[in-house]
Length: 79
Image (cartoon, rainbow, N blue to C red; front, side, top):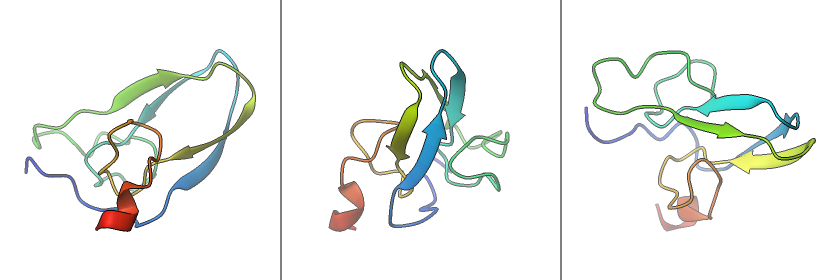
């Protein structure tokens, strides 16, 4: 698999903590969306690590088509 699976056609609103690192699922196969659970192994895809700059709610891409990974850029509206 070199193309990601669409997990959902909407962003995931999640609360993040300042200074904490997260791994966003880029393959779409994770059972713990929008975060990586290691399901990408053997797919040729890898999770995207990001560190929160503040305690806040962010909107992580669910369709895996964003051009601004891991954040939603509205790409799901073009699917």
